[in-house]
Image 1 (cartoon, rainbow, N blue to C red):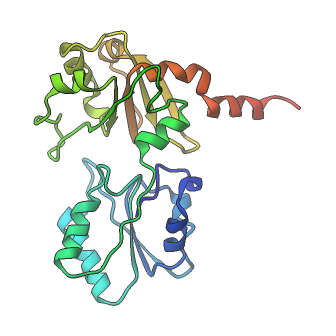
Image 2 (cartoon, rainbow, N blue to C red):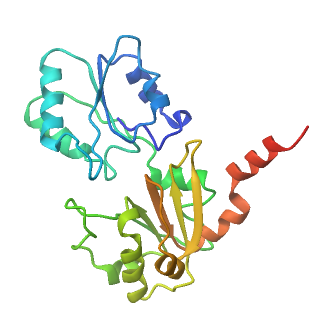
Length: 248
């Protein structure tokens, strides 16, 4: 099940139903703690998060644990940040369950590439800027810049690029995109801890990303394209905060 990018208000009705009935919730590191507090009283909470560079369970171990719990008669909820099948390894775990003859259902969630951008005041598409968008991961399974991607084709293929988990390699990715023809002045935004009270948004350009090499709080998602320029009028979170801070 997808838990969305952070804000509990973005959970689906099916997600709330599952949280209220699960015996065991195996949750990822990116699941907001406020969402875990919606679990039914008595539910067991198991941290199954994988974070780069930190001790964490392996993917086979996680899948095996889900199978053991299900065979023990438990109603198991595998809770993943965002959408389980958008760079979330949900399909890998579901395939393991299918191989073990464990019945399952997949409940989608709002992915950060859509929900996180919306909370930053950046539309994924706008008819004046783009009729296509490309979603891609910022690192391979080995943690390096994806080596199997045709960066020239990606640079030409869509006016808007949304990069998941790209913080560590964003400078190198920006260099590759510009080498493939993307303009150095193309607006680029980095959204950290999207949809949470700690959300921050850095608006820059591809060229400045390379020159300034800023530190990026994680988790973060990046977007490249002229839709970023629309944020100046669509930053509804910032406008709401200013309104709430005004003296009455």
